[in-house]
Length: 118
View (cartoon, rainbow, N blue to C red):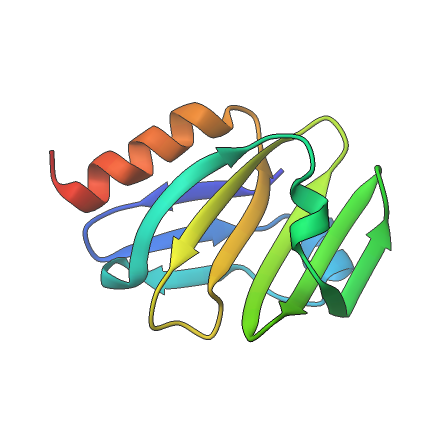
């Protein structure tokens, strides 16, 4: 499961070794000023991803890699049993990062509070 941390300088998505292998990507660090917000996603989120280039996909079990759809680019790392957190970005090569976490709502609230400074 990815570990997401945020501070005023940056947001870090630390992937496990297996997640790095499945997604063909290393852990991600995003400047804090590029983080627009975060939200927990519910059912149907997979249909918003688009075409996987490159990565691994076993629908319903594991989805990892870079996805492209209508000019948007997303990095995804999720496996069954995890809640889904979407981190929205601006001015980054990715428009969003979608990761599996233990408590997506709490983490989204933490990220949103950190970026608003409240």
